[in-house]
Amino acid sequence: MVRFEQLNKWFGRDFHVLRDIDLDIARGERLVVCGPSGSGKSTLIRCINALEPFQEGRLTVNGVALAVEGREDLRAVQQVRRSVGMVFQQFNLFPHLSVLDNLTLAPRNVAKVPRAAAEAQALAQLERVHIADQAHKFPQQLSGGQQQRVAIARALCLAPQILLFDEPTSALDPEMVHEVLDVMVELAGQGITMVCVTHEMEFARSVADRVVFMDQGQIIEQAAPEAFFSNPQSERAQQFLDKLLGVRR
Amino acid sequence: MRPSETIPARPAPPSSGGLRAWVRRELFGSWVSALTTLALLGWALWALPGALDWLLWRAVWQADADACQAARGVGACWGVITEKHRLILLGRYPLEEQWRPVLATGLLLALVIASGVRLFWTRWLVLAWVLVWVVVFTLMGGGVLGLAEVPTERWGGLPLTLMLTTLSIVLACPLAVLLALGRRSRMPAIRTLCAGFIELVRGVPLISVLFMASFLFPLFLPVGATPDVLVRVLLGIALFAAAYLAETVRAGLQSVPQGQLEAANSIGLGWWQTQRLVVLPQALGAVVPGLMNSFISIFKDSSLITIVSLYELTGSLGLALSGDPEWRPFMVEGYLFITAIYFVVCAAMSRYSLWVEQRHARGLAR
Image (cartoon, rainbow over all chains, first blue to last red; front, top):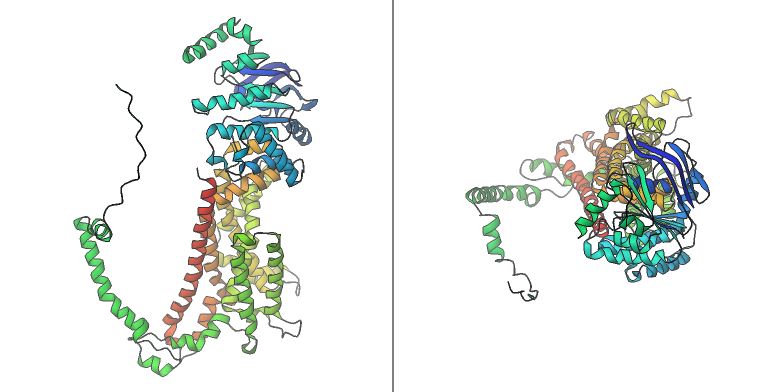
């Protein structure tokens, strides 16, 4: 479904943010990417829908090859984005549009779905994240958890085959984390390919097929969640988990 | 410690005192403020009777130049307005045809006011704009439908001011948006071109733009192929305004967070769609005060076209009075009259801008 081959990325000349990334993500797989801050995990998943250009290597998403920086093919990029949905840490809902209009924007303007059909579909997606009663409010009138669920519904509106989550719960108050995680768990049971950057180890443990651990732009190790949490192979993963779980206990 | 019981919500205490407390707090709160209040009050009591005397009680209202002369220094001569209001408001437009500019002005005002009302923000409004402008130009210019032809150099007064202002704003806005987007473009050629245009135009006074449009520009065109002076001046003002507006719009564009662009990209919107549907609605909403500031400037700066012999409101006041020795002494009253007109229009514009701002803020408010 997604294949990274020897992918390298730099910010500017000196900051080598992704180093020799090799990664295969299977259709329907639920992948959790974790690692200390600055390890390149967000950058990694942002490459998948071409939000970040890369300078070396190959990246294929859903059969479409994304080219290195400077040779991007707009049609390929658009094709990839049609099949990939993304949920951001800061929600990034459009504040000038109602919840419903946030959801119908892409279907109506990208997929050219007529308004009535787009709204019906948007309501169905809102139903899926248990927030249909807020359809006519503006994003700022909702709590953080509600906003993030709207953002998930928006990402679902173009019926993506891959869903990317970039630390979806990090900007939320603690009591709202669960309403978002619950929705993600429900989605995970529905066969969609999911790639999540998250520190929610509970979620990783219960949902992920595989955990990828990154540090300093490299994939250090990958394993099934049980194996990773109970028996990390690398020292860096060991230290990371100690810190993370220490804080959480 | 015992867990405390839930405290029921109760209303806030009533704000303290009535008018008397307000006066004591706001006007006599300290020695400085008490003294200032008294001084201003004294000044008002001293100046107001004289001002009212001059403005109203001892003013001459009928068009009687001798009575005005007699009242000079003690009472205003509003008779000059009674006598000259047609010239001031309509310039040199032929007397027997003056119903035409009056009707055109009415149509234009109705159009502009209707455009400000949310109820009318439909596709029909675009059609209305095209239609009204066709009718306005036909009315003003004539030459068809049995209307006598009136050349543009005889157009003047308030209709000319309003036409120039609205049309140049309408032309300048889309251009300003394109310039602002272009200045932020990733393509160096476009970026340089837009920045160059903006800096060049901003570095030149409007007067010289008008001079160029009116005198220099025709020299570069074959004889007979020169567009009408009004068109040239209109384009000059529009380009000038666009450069200023573009910088305001750019400020708005910069206020839209990067995350909005990423979100728009991630749902597959193309560049133009992203700008049109996501960025511009937020960017323009954020800079309404700045935009209105520029609109008001354009409205008032339109008075500069007098120097290329187009007599809009300010120019036609000069035209009406300076050629007439009998009424020439009463320029001040004339200026007060057009000041009132400018003020009413500008005040309406800023009230409207406040309303738009509040509406925008409500949409974005938590």
